Length: 299
Image (cartoon, rainbow, N blue to C red; front, side, top):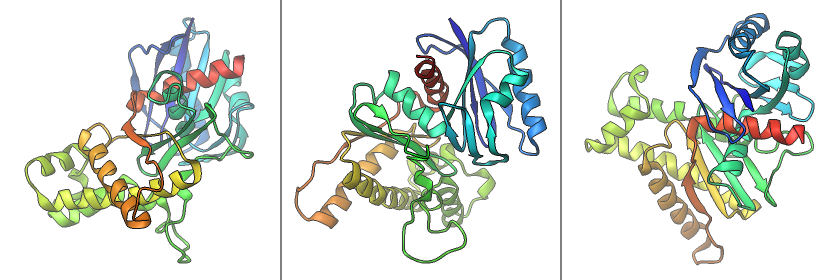
């Protein structure tokens, strides 16, 4: 059987055919409508129409707190027009097929659990480094969703005790890649609009010490939160995903800084550090995990 997999992001929507074994066909991309629910539904309907005669159903990944069993969205994260509505019921009025929806971070985690670097792992964590910090938690070999389906909303972890009306002191801001890119632009005197992961690594590989310091400091603050999560969950493996995770330097620096934090905080080897590695599927993991969610719900 063949399904239509759709990963709705805050900037782009990726979609394409995926078979029962999680093998993806050609992935296409459209700009995600940010203006209105009507434009969003139009986009989803257009994508469905393109594949309607080929598919068994639709597996969807999207931002927000999603009740994956029912399709109810408490909110749609960066999609501000999605709030307190049933996504499955709404989409099925336009797309005449079976639909299941999962949060994007949880979908990425499910993809790694099903076919990737969390397969056969009983206790694990996945972090997706993007505008915020997404991801998921594996407990006893299953995705932890939480009583209100909001387990793994790492972005909202506070990083200090200061009162703030904005998100400055939340994990998602402190370790979102926007802040990293802003620091590199400031320190290296380059336009912010030109900074992305490729440029960052090019600067570092060319010997730019300021860029290297920026990335190392980013990895140190990330390592502090990985330490905290490990003290709570005692995971076997932590998976790092997101746009800057493809270069092996990132995992090297994270491991170096996690070791540093352990030594600073504990002074001796009282706890076993988890294995930290990059994801197997990268950006495609959301669609693969969305299909796994579809299959679990159909069972």
